[in-house]
Length: 156
Image (cartoon, rainbow, N blue to C red; front, side, top):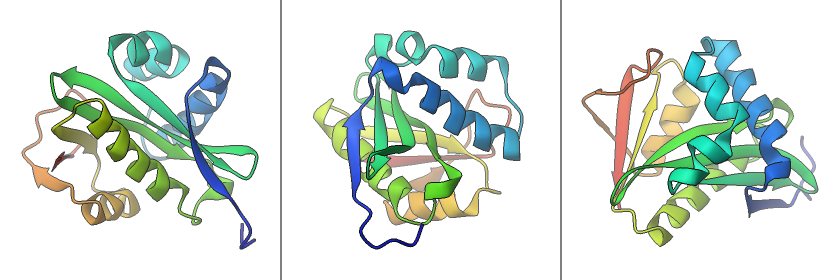
């Protein structure tokens, strides 16, 4: 997408967004890794696994099309996990991911977060670069995900 008149907006998740949340995340997981059993559950039932426990999901729009998503999963008081960030392939390169990440940080602060953690894989160089630009720093890996080889955190 090279049109300079693309308007990017961030909205709160609604049940109508579930198919996009699942589609975008499945696409990148299956491209680079494999779906774990918990992935199927979370992607098909984000209301149960993210929202019901104090987390939130944001959706990115490019003009009037759903373009990407990111979730903040409640971990413990003051700590949220930045997770399930994905941008539809046709909208990559127009800053949807960056705007989603920035909106998630603002949202985490509004929820009372003092720290955001994330788990990723070093082969996802573009994502890791974005996280570093946003202020995330690498910490020892202790996560539950088999496909993760890096943990990062951002102190708010």
